[in-house]
Length: 292
Image 1 (cartoon, rainbow, N blue to C red):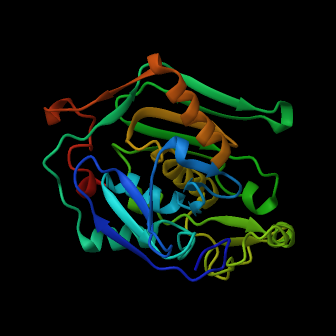
Image 2 (image 1 turned 60 degrees about the horizontal axis):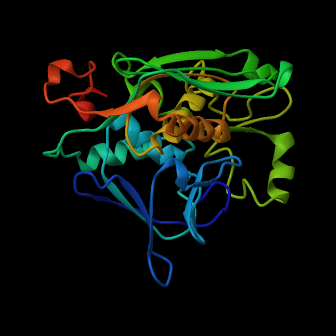
């Protein structure tokens, strides 16, 4: 079921040839439409990341994209029968499990990375409303995120997480973190046609004081870890893995996409690299699916 649409949906993940990238295919339409992921393909960032071509769209792609980033999946066809990726349990864990169960093939082609050569930053608002996101040169892939929700249940948990792909385990440290929301926002969201499929089985839900889920949290810092999960999915919409350090304060889907567009606009700030010699590649990148 889709989180926002409430629609039943089926997806089939199929292997793709080297240099295909990740391509979503709306197979329910009279003429199937392919939507290749890219920063420019993002058409909406309200509560989720939506990609589209013409009138064909796919909503809430970030959790599946995050799983692909965490497992190092570069080439994939995603056949989908509706306009929203299923929410499953609200995290990326089910996608990780299914991809690993199917098996990941190492292809006979060099992996192409976008490498940061200079810092790129986007900022929005000021004072208590300030949000920002930044990419900086780094020989690897590291993400740092800080949240600030001014809510008792969130404030009592970790507010900042740093996750480095070379030393951490995506499947253990990040993938199980669920999306979250507040009961006070649900009525307004549903009036706008959002969160129609949301509930305690696919999100962390909070009233004004506490977490309502009977099982509590999966991580002591699950809220900010889910923001890392989302950011990894949003940034992988670039179409290639990043060699960079990402840091953010109160960022979200909109600012993450603005950051990618700003990066692409600064041609001198990045280049595309491959590693013929595994010894020159960042630690952990040579055998992605197994290492992570």
